[in-house]
Amino acid sequence: METVLVALKDSLILSVKLFLIILPLSIFHEFLKGRGSGLSKKHFAFLGISRSGLVPLVTGIIIGLTYGAGVIIHSIRTSDIGKKEAFLILLFLSICHAMIEDTLIFVVIGANGFILIAFRFVLAIILTYAIHRSRIFRTPEGGKE
Amino acid sequence: MKSDNYLPVLRKGFVNGIAVTFTMVKVIVPFYIVIEFIKKTGLIPVISDFFKPFMQLIGLPGEAALGLMAGYFINLYAAIAVITPLDLSAKDITIAALVLGISHSLPLETAVTKQTGVNAWVLMFARVFFSLLSGVMLNIIWKLFS
Image 1 (cartoon, rainbow over the protein chains, first blue to last red):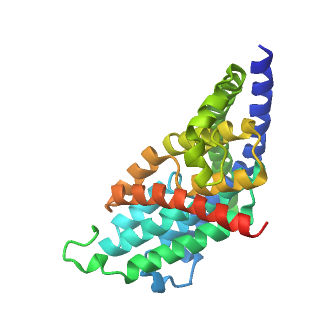
Image 2: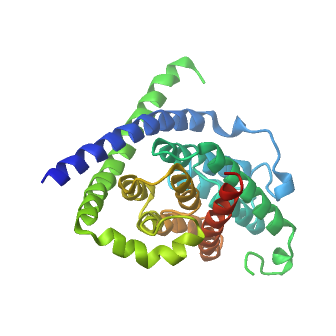
């Protein structure tokens, strides 16, 4: 019984810490949605990602695949983003997404946030650039190896 | 944005934050309690020994395999609930966070990826592969600089 109480207390303390991170993030998320796509002017062209691809890309990097799902799916389906570009966007996001929340919730339990962010950004850029430059998409079908 | 628009946005963000926290608590509390019980049964060393050879590659103790599996198959909150009671070092937590940050909630997020029309299976395997590779790399880098 004591084990349950201690675990209950510890897990609730952890939940409160995470709540303090999640609450401002979800408010920030709503404001970000209000601002729309005027957010970014930088080009990701060297990775094969165009201006219209920036909406799903930035949404995924900041908010993540789970909570950003609506925006990401909608913006990829309803824009002129091609199959190759969609793959590159999702590839980048596979490595590098929900960078604020994922990083902070691990920082709460003792991780080094700087290493996490730097490592994931660098890996995502290298990988996306490599696939963009490779011959994988030169085949008529595209999208598959 | 007009100033009279701030309040509904703030409200929506607040409501969402509460909703997410509620989902999170429902995952974290039971997992935390289960792990505390498993710790009591003495099963942790058995599980740890089993995964040790593999987990050593990414520089994590064997029992961290439980956290990785919880993260891969369920979500990050489950993973955190499993990892926190294990009392790992800062290095171990950073490596686990890197592996899990890249690859987590695979059933749910692969479904999202599939909806965009790209080959979601390729990306799922890429995520798992690169998450583990990143763990190996960070383990080596960390050792070099410490």
